[in-house]
Length: 172
Image 1 (cartoon, one colour):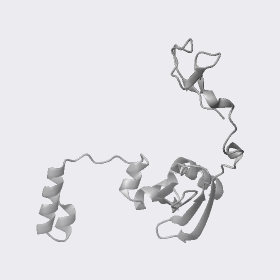
Image 2 (image 1 turned 180 degrees about the vertical axis):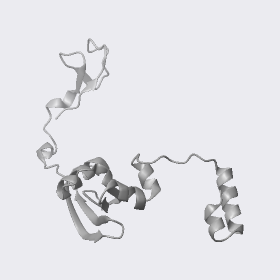
Image 3 (image 1 turned 60 degrees about the horizontal axis):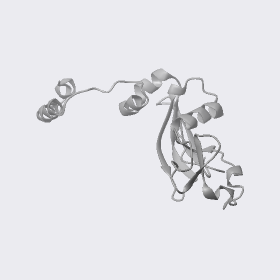
Image 4 (image 1 turned 120 degrees about the vertical axis):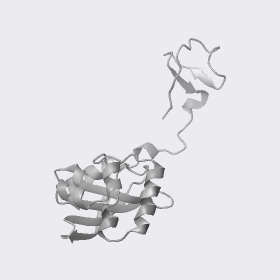
């Protein structure tokens, strides 16, 4: 396999850098040693497949969700995006609404090829809005982040220290 680099306006060998040779088309430039044998034959034919397995599956009726640990095998690939994982989980568990799936806590194993994380599947979107952490809703663009400056937050915190009970909950 060769890498092409787009270089605009190169018409002859004189204007190309010394370690590159111009090919017939103006845009594509390949290295001099392009005819050399591939040092890793068959590498581009390796299976680049992402497999997802769930374990420690549990139905949590109080929080109206299913929860599990996901093991992801992604040999010869970077850690897959949460979007791709979400699509796979939707297919595995036959879920209609992607907003009911929460993915978090993914860590790649040393050496790559394996990752592990958590998945929550809420029964419906209302249940997710009610029970899921606000920062996760904000991360998935399902809620807006409150834009408050630092000083009012600190003042509120210090006012709450001085009061107890219902007054503390209602303090603004």
